[in-house]
Image (cartoon, rainbow, N blue to C red; front, side, top):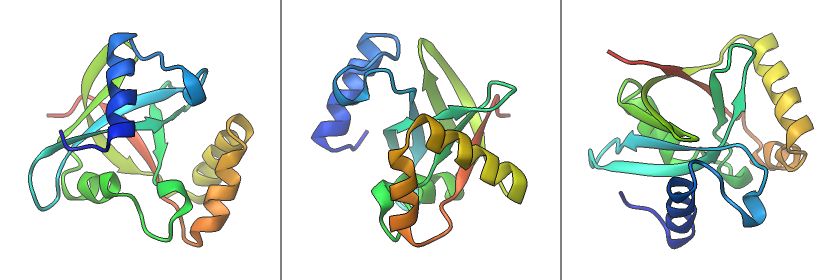
Length: 141
């Protein structure tokens, strides 16, 4: 699991406290997404803010802090969409990635995420690209 020291601390705290993380993430809905590296094949875990839809399925936003390129986890997820592990609270499950392509659903998820986390509006604007929204479907063959 290659990760930077900041993410490693968040991952450790998340796992030690059944998904609860303090500090700047206190009260923020986080999950841990483990993907298989697109080139390396190595497993990589990333803490991500998520938003649940009406059916309770988590969605993540490929923001990369507002960078003009998508984050590495998104490239890994696209390369291996059926090889994901999600840790959500005390629950761990295999998942499959599905990018949200319906324009109305996409914008509604963004509207809800920005209402929950206003800083996401600035990240989205700064990115200068269509930021993918990914639904994480529980259970993968």
